[in-house]
Length: 78
Image (cartoon, rainbow, N blue to C red; front, side, top):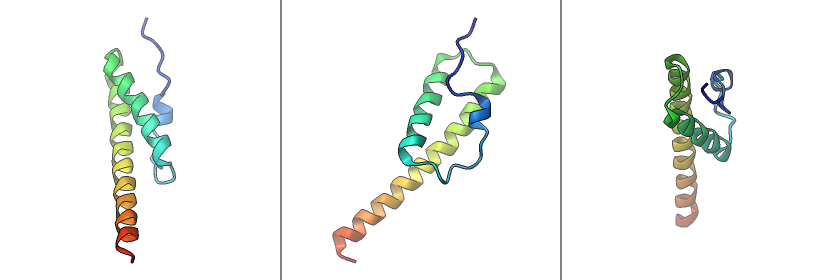
């Protein structure tokens, strides 16, 4: 019997990721990756988790880009 995921499709279906902190998004992304790597998910659930993972990865990248810009501004004295 497949092990239950700590990340359920209903949790991953939320399109709102803009108010998620980087740390929370990264933790959820790690959970999704671990779950997908187990390889025992039904196809539909794997697709849902992959989609959510893509959203979270994009969010993390955007937040890192913004943080980098802030650091550069601080370093340049603007």
